[in-house]
Length: 83
Image (cartoon, rainbow, N blue to C red; front, side):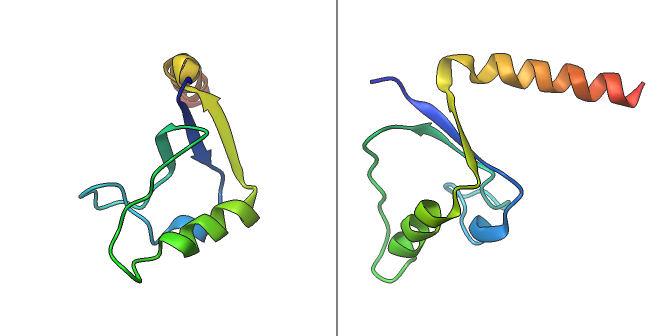
């Protein structure tokens, strides 16, 4: 089973969620699989996160193997717009 990156579009539904000890809210979920385990204390928002994910639909799933290639293309496009 190959992992993917789940990238959230311009949506504030996930602004209250963070990965590990990061200070910025999540913009994507690395290593997203068909089966995922979400761990957290009681009443920490796990179910709310899943509900938001299911109704949002504002995300793109990119194969992890191609994720770095996509990043490189985006960086080139951004650089071209700057110049």
